[in-house]
Image (cartoon, rainbow, N blue to C red; front, side, top):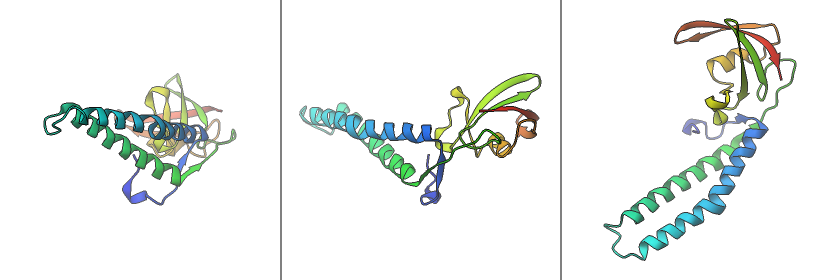
Length: 157
């Protein structure tokens, strides 16, 4: 979600993330918007709107779609693509970390692209912030609910 106080601030994201948001906006404006208008028209044809659950559901769906379209337009208007390099951790990099004899890989992305199932973490998260600018061999300590966790950077892609 875009922060209302940051409407004119740059929103850093990866090129991949920018393309995904553009794709979502295109789908909402070219497909979903017309679908919901068809649903509204069909519901109106049934008569009394005051007790028409189909009409109410379609209006709610339309409201959600229009809100998301506005949100995406704001994000895209302020988006700035940031690319990492392989010498130090930055936006767009995949970072291989070692912690307690376990290896994990995270993709450093913008806040709008976070997806924990795909190990995409924000550059603004505690771990993301700690990793920014680090090189292979560097270690960072991050405060976690279970206490301080130490990570060692063992690879940057």
